[in-house]
Length: 401
Image (cartoon, rainbow, N blue to C red; front, side, top):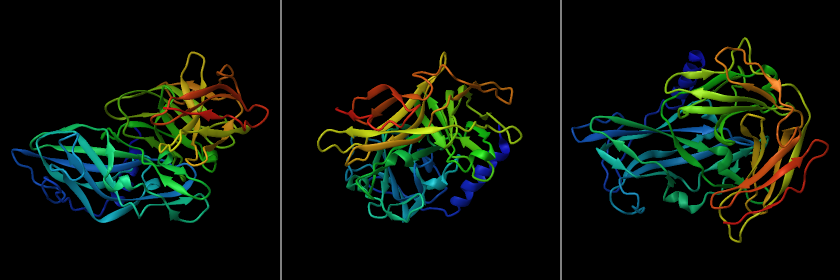
């Protein structure tokens, strides 16, 4: 495990969460303060927030007002049985400060021992903002549904005398979509991730740090977690991963993509891919772009995302890059896609890893399988979009339920 880097991340998280929050009871719940005493019939729930990096923004600010929990999966906003962790005052959090395993604790509260089926994250609908890269802060249009809370898929048990820790991963990249020229809409994508700070760590070369380097952990071409390396050191930590195998994808503008296949994550410790003495590097190479339009059903409210994927011979399928489609116009663009062959290595505990150019990648070097998908839509794909000689500008889709 890269203990120095992991401890640095935890120290950074501690700096962010130095202020203690009050946990207040709501609905039929109890009340208390952080560090509440438990009884023979109560336990404690603690909730923290983390984030994946955002695409094209210098800041994504959300203002959290409370976290709500209820034993009933069908309980409505005004029904009995709610216990609230209330942030007073509501806290404005820049999600982009929460990468590489950094956590921001939202608070904790005592709960009666038992099974809980509903969890909601409530945002202030009028106090969320974004800063586009190189731009100025502007309002982030927030749906009124956030006033009753973002429903999270997670059931959990609270045992008497025990504390349950939940980590909410707020995916800033997928949560902010454009809505016409110069207008941004919040479509929250939040999931509950494992509390244990285990995962995949490493270092990327200094030559990549000024080129929007990104590292992601994927399974079957689906991005499970992603982060940006530390801008000064190149260190990265893909944290809070469930046990299993992951394919790690490294990208940087103006470079070939790098992929490490079948990286194991155990229940403790972290899997190290590289060190400061031998960082992960990518060869420079030409890039292109894929653009088009995603046509959605009339009055659609769910966002669509377009992914550029490649498959390695006798290896994994990975998403190299993806982009959201404008929710009003359907326009999308995936920029800085590598035209040159990706670099591939199978994971080994013996470092440094050995990469080779994957010249047999499918659908071909400089070609991508492009998929359009979104919640409630049937996924559509174009099998071989070729950018080896020119940018693709008409990769269009029509999505339906």
